[in-house]
Image 1 (cartoon, rainbow, N blue to C red):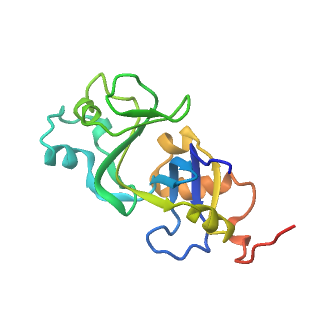
Image 2 (cartoon, rainbow, N blue to C red):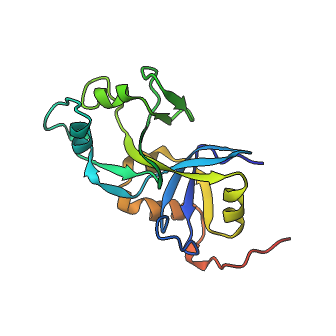
Amino acid sequence: MNSLQNHLLIATPMLNDPMFKRTVTYICEHNEEGAMGLVINQPADLSVTSLLDKLEIVYPENNQHLQGSVYQGGPVGRERGFVIHPPQDNWRASQKMSDDIMVTTSRDILEALGSSAAPPQFLLTLGYAGWEAGQLEEELGENSWLAIPADPELLFNTPPSERWQKATEQLGFDVWQLGPDVGHA
């Protein structure tokens, strides 16, 4: 099995699930037991500052880094937060995914947002998408998803409304030309 960890899953036009229509999902874990990812292009109706207020975390006012939205990371564990950011070694619960990307789940990163210790770029998600063993592979075989290596530029510097289109452009073909039939050589 080829792991898709540190890849982006792009929902194809054949994926009819309204929760995942035109989503881009960052895959944090993929192994024989299943997969776990964070949707990175569905802003929630919640700002970072509103979330910090709810958690009673003090932050500097008028900080540009905190003006963005929290993202709907997926339908599972919506009370769980995940921060995708460039690697830093100062957080209690982090996993380095690549030289460019780290995922942190500890409160200490939230407490640092807006300070000089904060990551220079970040995406904050609530919830995650999960697949049981073999489920993601089956959905890939049905042309529901396509995968590309994770791209920090797309993650951190592309507006959320453009992430699906920019990700599909990296495929090198028109995703709208895909059909529901899967061929086997």
